[in-house]
Amino acid sequence: MGELLRAICSECGFVSEDLYTGFGFKGAGDHSMEPSICPKCFSFKLRDRRHPPQMCYRCKTEVVFYGDRQFSVLFFPDPLHSETVAEDSTDRLTKGRHVCPECLRAALVFERLGHWD
Ligand SMILES: [Zn+2]
Ligand SMILES: [Zn+2]
Image (cartoon, rainbow, N blue to C red; front, top):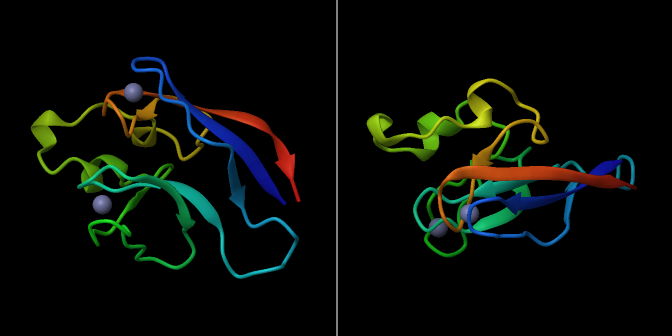
């Protein structure tokens, strides 16, 4: 069972493809796909959160997962220039505002489109 999400940025109009998160097909695999972002080249992608570290295919940097309570620490190298993100107060993807991979503002929301299995 997984959740079908879509990420939308209110600042720059970025819209993700449909994101099939979780694992689907109950018990079909020991993995859990979650949206992530590369702190270096900002590549936005679903990756397997159950098997860290996950490396960016483009630049080989370890990616950061949305919904990770450490998000701001891991994503913003300079704490003085970090944005307030949803992860500072919740681990629910569909709550609050997240960092947009296009404009890097905390203006991205995850909408729940439904469940899939
Ligand atoms: Zn990268
Ligand atoms: Zn944006």
